[in-house]
Amino acid sequence: MTDFDVFNGDADGICALAQLRNAEPRDARLITGVKRDINLLQRVEPGAGARLTVLDVSLDKNRSDLERALAAGAEVFYCDHHFAGDIPDHPNLHTLINTAPDVCTSLLVNHHLDGAFLAWAVVGTFGDNLRDSAQRIARPLGLSAERLASLENLGVYINYNGYGSQLEDLHFEPAQLYRLISAYASPFDFMRDGAQHFQKLEQGYRQDMASAAALQPHYRNGAVAVYLFPDEPWARRVSGVYSNDLANADPHRAHAVLTSRPNGCYLVSVRAPLNNKTGADELCRQFPTGGGRKAAAGINDLPAEQLQKFIDTFAGFYAQ
Image 1 (spheres, rainbow, N blue to C red):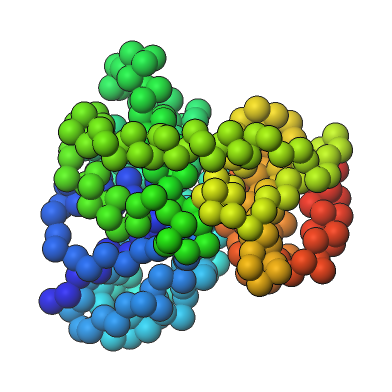
Image 2: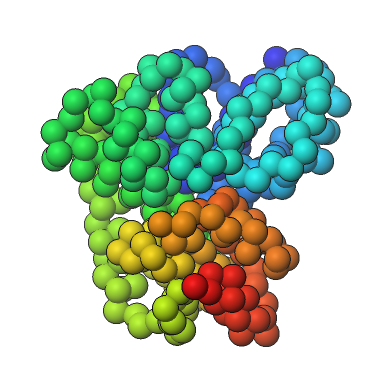
């Protein structure tokens, strides 16, 4: 029997798997990548009896490879909060999918495990920029404001680490970071024993965010703001978490961060207004390579000649 753990390389995917494997240890092959690498099931060649755990990647984007795995006789547990489309009806497929805007995969796994590793769920939920949900589920932990803030920081830093167009952009490869944190049942133990890893993430985050904060918006009106980032490793690393920061600082406005790519296209991160967390996925799916969830979505490869079309569509979509 061969086991595969397939997971998004962001905080939500990593923390969801950390919960599961602390609850049910399994010697599985890790299949992951940068945050935008979501067609992960195409890298799996399962045989009959294989067990696949798939976390925090859209079923709709992986449909054909999921059907291939099921046809080969694999058993699949699929947990996610992105647009799924029609879910295949198969006896070997077990799904836990909820696309509500205040839900993430770490939250779903936490419920599935009856809160067995709640602190990791809090980290993953903070990392997915669901602050209200994270604070709500953290209440049973009875944490001080300082200790809760440390979980939030860890979630943001793990999430920050997942962004980039290639693994070389990242401070830690997601599989490596997962191995480092999943050795601990508690994120507080990781932050104590793995202080050097935490500090590496924190230092990189602060430097990159300072670079981003120096940029002015390319376009801004009463409803939206658009930022253009250069083709630099720091810009690729910080694009998603800076989008979250913009959303948190201005909850009535939708934000888009477009990062230049070597091929002349843009990598796009979109955040719906926090006071109306909807439509980001619908907007991005209007463009090839676009997708995501209601509150946060993106486009992997927006041609430069479609920049103005994107801005016009974005502004019109969220017009007040």
